[in-house]
Amino acid sequence: MQSGKMKALMKKDGAFGAVLTEVPIPEIDKHEVLIKVKAASICGTDVHIYNWDQWARQRIKTPYVFGHEFSGIVEAVGENVGSVKVGEYVSAETHIVCGECVPCVTGKSHVCTNTAIIGVDTAGCFAEYVKVPADNVWKNPAGMDPAVASIQEPLGNAVHTVLESQPAGGTTAVIGCGPIG
Ligand SMILES: [Zn+2]
Ligand SMILES: [Zn+2]
Image (cartoon, rainbow, N blue to C red; front, side, top):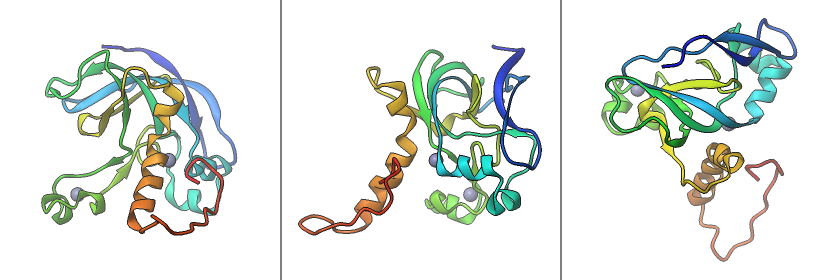
């Protein structure tokens, strides 16, 4: 188990920008996994947080480490974790659900009323290490570029959006040329 300090990009207080600093390496509980970050990508959400716009002011509590899209290697697992092993190459689903509310217990955890988001409500991945619940871990193919593995969250966003419509044979306008576009 790692202990000690790590470099992290922090929102120290409610203002524009961020600070590269040292913070303690996160400690995991029985159900969590500690991951050594290989690549992290910058989401539009992170730009809101960095700029400290109106949304960020209402949503974010400082000080904390931000960032939620990443890939990395499992460094340690909690004692109850059987689904993930040390050394595996992973990314993570960024929404942490409670498992106890009505949507969660009826198979609709995508609309969990207590959803927490990695790097928004919890310490994020703009750091050497990030911890996530084992249930959030997504295993990557060994040969996948870490930078590509990091953008699976926005990729999932785009894929689900496209599959909600019936684009086959039609003409589609893609508005917005970020990674999701
Ligand atoms: Zn994102
Ligand atoms: Zn829930």
